Image 1 (cartoon, rainbow, N blue to C red):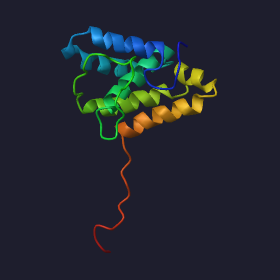
Image 2 (cartoon, helix red, strand yellow):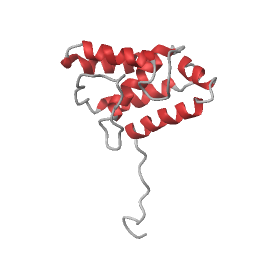
Image 3 (cartoon, one colour):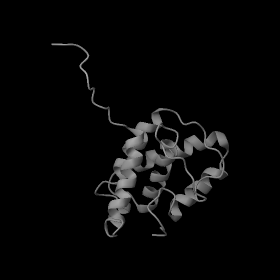
Image 4 (cartoon, rainbow, N blue to C red):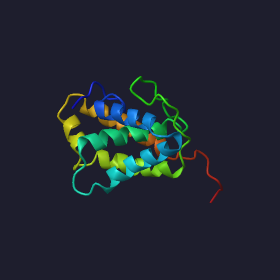
Length: 145
């Protein structure tokens, strides 16, 4: 699998995705991230592992720009600056991550065969939670009934 950790850039495919981002013009980086997410969403029957790994990396880049997001602090991530992503990429990233952890996903299957599978799923859920935070329950009512 070419993987050495559970982080979004701790595998060969994600590192190659980061290199591809560095190689395209700055004004094309958002389009590459968007295309990666769309490709995962549109994989109707089976999502292959390389596309899944790239999707997780793309989603992590978007999440890094959200409140509560973890900055990408790895030498395997992009070296060049990424643009401030359009707001609609957050919901696209959520949908793509849901596809990555679905039953018909090779990446999810491969992680399911390892002892670190639950940690990997938790990591993906963490990225997803930053992209689509749950609303906190309101402690005091807005008005009395």
